[in-house]
Length: 189
Length: 422
Image (cartoon, rainbow over the protein chains, first blue to last red):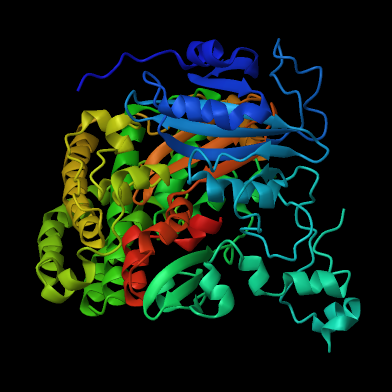
């Protein structure tokens, strides 16, 4: 079987999606493609199926929080990195055929961060997105299972946000039942 | 900010308490009406290799659906890393996949090196390969022992742990620690191999192949083992790829993908070894692959030990802005003292940018995403761990099999819950 020649992912995506590609970055040999949040699944699916690209594997989804001030208008992609919003979600995709990786990045706003889910493209995105929803508090719209993944179900807040204090949480399971009951009288009945 | 506050109303509390409405859409409708049975397996089940809870929906003995529940070992390692300098964060990475800490160290160290654009001298790379392959053997030995004991073969565990003990002894020689070694560091390794290490590893390499034959004699043609393992937990290659499986779990389905070959790091491209592949994608093929990986690791180790004798030189980067000076320099050079002080107090700055680096751990691709801040602490470190991905694929692997097969399937994908929950 003849393998089609590898295409440049940046050019191919620009040609197919035009304005949806907001920024392109190269750092330490890694290409990053910042795309319009609403169109991320489309772009990912395009990268997955197009001949010459075939990014057929989702390696990882990681989220980063640019709190407090490391985002906004100053970060316009010039001398500084391109960061329009507070949360950056990176989809690390890999093409086994052409043996290369690509990062597709989408940004979510500080207030009510939302992104469309990539589970429609890869089932592997299911838990990776649940982890981010749990720990970073980004809602993935259309995700089939929106329960918390790692933290207890009754947890308040999202620990991986940069404004979440390190080491200040209530210690559970430490014989503080009386104190807990004081806070929730309805638990006694 | 509200942190772990108790429920504010009875309704809120009710919402958290387990009820079937929560599971609507995740289990079949038959479970809601009570036609099929919902069964908790774990979190204290001995075959769940840690604390994994599986909510199984059973029709008789057949698994209709499976909902893994993880997080019992979540220790916030990634969050804690944000509060430490790059070098001091390293010991925390040991604690994720506690069966092969060297692989975690390597994933983290390699990502930091990529972020800093730091080089590793040749001898350092060879020592790393020795450590990584020893870690692979040690991890596979625990897998073999526990997998066999899950399936009812009690004696294999004792044999496997006997050999693992020798590997841990070698780790102790290298790093002073048997398990949480923190030996592979950004820029190279902590120290050179001690003098008695080479004779010990040569003796081990001499003895070990015969031991692998012993394990095989116990299991490979054993009819009970074959009955339990063949045709169980089958995952097709395209499904395995869609679910993001890596490592032996992916190669068991016949996909030739090993990062040591495909995207070599630490000089793996210069070693001669094969990537064992399966055909059927079942528990038995995954078993065979790991057994063959023992032999391939032996090949790599033999070559690496030969090189270790030949190649002398520094074992960590000479760039003193990132790697501490040798102890012998401290008494003679003021500059070395300054570097030492600076490195162990402030650390070093890393660019305000992001990298992703992946290596092949015994379980599969372990990726490390680091986003620097421009200062001495990372903004975000995220580990893509193979166990996490593999547990998320358990539902598709176990569907339609019997409850007793679940134990075999969990064992065959080789999960470590510390690795999953971080």
